[in-house]
Image (cartoon, rainbow, N blue to C red; front, side, top):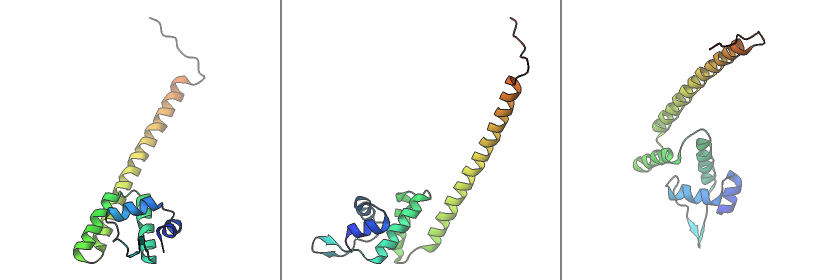
Length: 126
């Protein structure tokens, strides 16, 4: 299949697909004349890249993984799993920060309500 079909099947732009290839996120496909010919494996890889991006991975993080793949001539499953677990820890830390922020907002709301409720306010004399 040509790049247009790959783009349609993955929801990705041809420009992004070329970038992924340029960054080494997958090996250059064989050519038929001047056209790249992609396989169903490329569909899987591009979809995987898109999912990884959607959960917060940067292309540079994926490049490191694929460089290791090329070096060892096999997909570094252990490295990928470790990277995913690290990302999960980062997300959990962000969640904890957001819970703390939410608690502070509740306190602020209570304080504002206490200070400015419809009770008669004392006037400042100075």
